[in-house]
Amino acid sequence: MSSTWFITGSSRGFGRALALAALRAGDRVAATARDPQQVSDLVEEFGAQVLPLALDVTDAAAAATTLAATRDAFGRVDVVVNNAGYANLAPIETTAEDDFRRQFETNFWGVHNVSKAAIPILRAQGGGTVVQFSSVGGRVGGTPGLGSYQAAKFGIDGLTRVLATETAPFGIRYLVVEPGGFATDWAGASMDVGTVPDEYRSTVGAVAERLRSSPAAGDPDRAAEILVRTVGRERLPSHLVIGAGAARLAIAYSEQQIAEATAWEAVSASADFAAPRVELPSD
Figure 1 (spheres, rainbow, N blue to C red):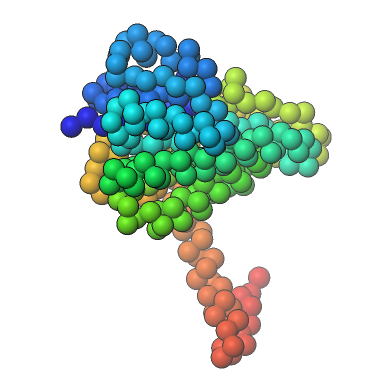
Figure 2 (figure 1 turned 90 degrees about the vertical axis):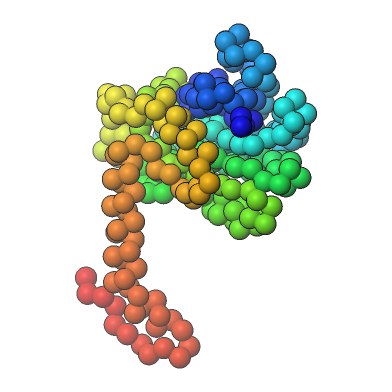
């Protein structure tokens, strides 16, 4: 049985790859973009399987309108994909506040707007799946120059964990996708690289140079095909890291977290009223 997908940011990158994968699997896709003309070729190839819609995810009312239009056109909405997002690169100290806020508005509030608007539709039809595009940086963090982007991605994870518990009785499932480096234009035309002061050459400057000079290992088309298959499973993982490098980073970070929490466990427990005082771990 075919499904109906609602995908934000369908004009390029992961959004476009996922739209194509779903369409090739025989599903229907509401392909949203700021300019729906950018998905006109999908309409030409797949015809009535595609519903092109204009959407700026920072507009909460528009998110609700386009989701309702999708339901009206296709009868239901099975999978909602929050993919739209971008990053600019600069030190937090020198990033203009309006730039930091604009990134966060799209990367976090856009996900909030679409997720919130989807709930009544998914609840009314008895359930559905919400796919949230985060990043391995939203799990590991600490990438110099990506302060606003990674703060938003951590926020998406926290928001989605709460949504998953609140809406579980409605049959709504959530998948947080955490990609590593993929061959999209995320670090190309979509990214503005600000002036890097000398004090940040070894940190932010090094990241900027790596993004410019190192080709990404990840294939977005392969990732999209994996995601279509994963969403079709009865048992959905809560998080899916994609990309070999990202998987290694995520596992190493989780092991480090467990080791640190274990080393400080006695100190943590000693904060309780009835607990004895303990010494801190040795340096």
